[in-house]
Amino acid sequence: MGQPYAWRLLSRVSSFRRASVILQHLRMSMHTEAAEVLLERRGCGGVITLNRPKFLNALSLNMIRQIYPQLKTWEQDPDTFLIIIKGAGGKAFCAGGDIKALSEAKKARQNLTQDLFREEYILNNAIASCQKPYVALIDGITMGGGVGLSVHGQFRVATERSLFAMPETGIGLFPDVGGGYFLPRLQGKLGYFLALTGYRLKGRDVHRAGIATHFVDSEKLRVLEEELLALKSPSAEDVAGVLESYHAKSKMDQDKSIIFEEHMDKINSCFSANTVEQIIENLRQDGSPFAIEQMKFSLTKTRLQNGNQPI
Image 1 (spheres, helix red, strand yellow):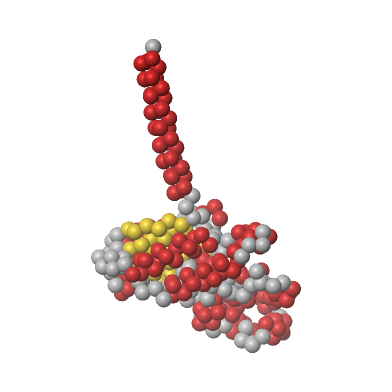
Image 2: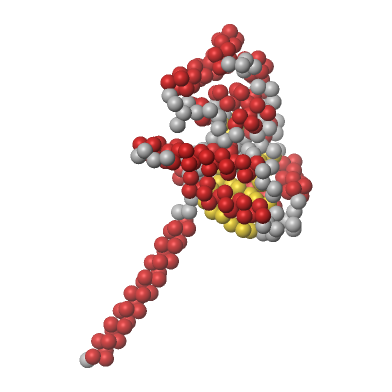
């Protein structure tokens, strides 16, 4: 009787161990699926995937703390020739910083806000100074913090699904993530207009405005990515050549009029003032439906900024 009992006991222990191993693998799998950012070394390059599709890939402090050291590692790695960053889910590249997390941290009197902005700006600077070709696939919503992850890189690829905006002033914050650098460098006063109104640019207009360097049909992005990663020891010129070839082949919305072009004269005249108050006065004097719409938006934001401290 003792021997069969012992055998049954050992069998149960063995089954328990197998179950424990299976559960451990399941936990690891769940953890991997839940990772906020995926960092992969593929072919000749490194690939960063923002992996919070349910939250439109909103940028968290945890994501920043994973991306920055990996970016610096790949930059120094002689076998890594380019870096690609993209968003998961098909709806957004990155819709901005995780405002919800900041709000909750503020209520809990935590210093998350200062840490996030400080480290986010350090990452933005690292992208701007990166010595390897940096390719941002800005497919879908690209706002605020998402702009910081892309616009400072050497190459920015927009698609027909791209939706660009700098909506920070709507919550009483200045256009951050280096907005004060790249926005004034856009044509005419377009950057001032985008900064103060949060106006949204869509699709090919993101390229036409000078925010993206190339435009590619969204359905071609996967093939484009694979072709870039298959290059042998590519230079920046090689990467640019591949991007140019895809850009040249894209005919989507090519004949579509530029959404802001019809208003450029008004934008240049009204937003050329040195103060927001004078800009609002210029819009009031213009009196066109476009000017009145922007004036109402600017007045709302001015009240927000005067009545609230930036978060």
